Image (cartoon, rainbow, N blue to C red):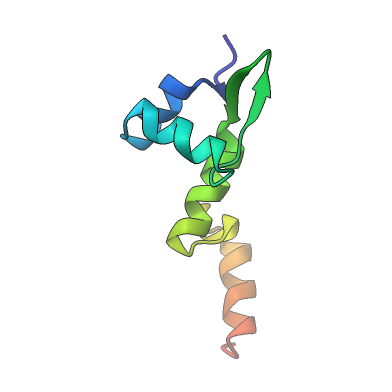
Length: 80
């Protein structure tokens, strides 16, 4: 099975919430998902981005910093 696409149950486990909560959020379009044959599916990548947005993180902040990205960030903040 492809772990990049998750079911309601898998998302509930991932987020540590009840399956009904995930279903409700999906129905209200408050969590990124799509239907296949009437059943909800969720891309792990979309969920991770959604979690970052909920916590105020950007995708770049969620990724480990490399020397290059650290240098660019310092220059943006006016540091040498």
